[in-house]
Image 1 (spheres, rainbow, N blue to C red):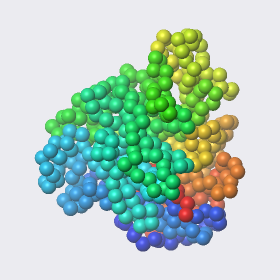
Image 2 (cartoon, rainbow, N blue to C red; image 1 turned 135 degrees about the horizontal axis):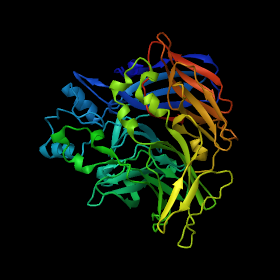
Image 3 (tube, rainbow, N blue to C red; image 1 turned 45 degrees about the vertical axis):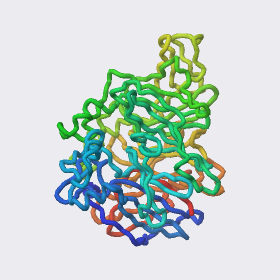
Image 4 (cartoon, one colour; image 1 turned 90 degrees about the vertical axis):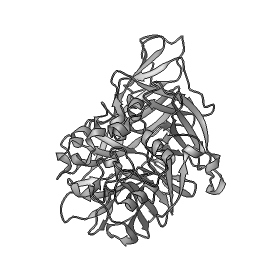
Length: 516
């Protein structure tokens, strides 16, 4: 497994793969996957998985064959590191002992106070005909979908005066893209913002505007967020008690701490759900606090409205210790089962929360307000101002990187969820969950490291699971090749694999499929 965290060389010329099985005739397009690819610069080394230099991979599928290429994102951070032959900018888990001497003094001060990096190694998202890669900073880098060249930059600190943004965006069929970000003001706020779609996909970043602001419940301790949920009428943002401690941030230079060292899990605080009306930008039911027990999460699976309820599915841990278990010193083991992160991911559970919208001063105390048939989640008005939520567990194994038929079912009632699972035995697998019956199907070859599965729908498909799943597979066995796996989403059986001899894929994070 340790080889997955060695520096990866660029592959600029598309490398043809060897197809076993049969790729569907209708499957034509490119799977892009983003993640860290460079962990060593000169004699310096990144400490955390999330810190590696961003590298974008492309699997192009056309006429029953597939090719593979990858290139590093040409960020300012990437060029500064390589020109100085050392790590120059502080990343999430790595404090930079050195700074670029070419920077102006005020830039140094800004870097030290709240470190800024444009190393965008987490997600890929579309903006009309354009494509961007992001992490959790103020910058997204634009890439050419064909060549993977870095061709531009979106900086929300300049366009919207925001200081950071979540890694995950939402996009709609008209091209509109939705985000959530931070602003560090006298009273820090979480800001929902969007870039409206335009006919023909020629979208203009100057159209971006903030649609709603939510004041931070704990001003000195803004919550960490990685994603948010959305339907056609509502956003839901969850303020979790894993926070950025601003009192630690201001002393980062003195303490030589990275960002992760300035983050705390505060079990004394509840997890708070904020519901925002998309049409007005106003928070809903502000007289009441929707809360649940402390938890930590990265990813929402989906959310939809059923009657007067919002049904929200996510993957949550008991606390945020997983963040401290993704240091390279823990991941560079002979096998995944030897890592502490393996044990922790086993505890990550798929949970369903139900948020009742019809809550008022007349709502009865100490009665379950959830009346969704077959649902075991509860919402109880415990006090005059508090609605306490308990979740229903939807799957009894470790589960992360959830994916759906996004194009047709994001924000809508859905049935099938796909993702990455770690069984109690430590085996890694891909899983399909029926959210109505809780029945599951799984795939694993026993010795693989699968990536997040991406659903690609059949163009004329009538059913929700009519399509395929694509996952980039690294083997844990010497001599076995990396391959792109193609699963039938309905039966969860292998349709094809495309092997790429003598290379390994990145241990990446998230992907996007764009049809030709």
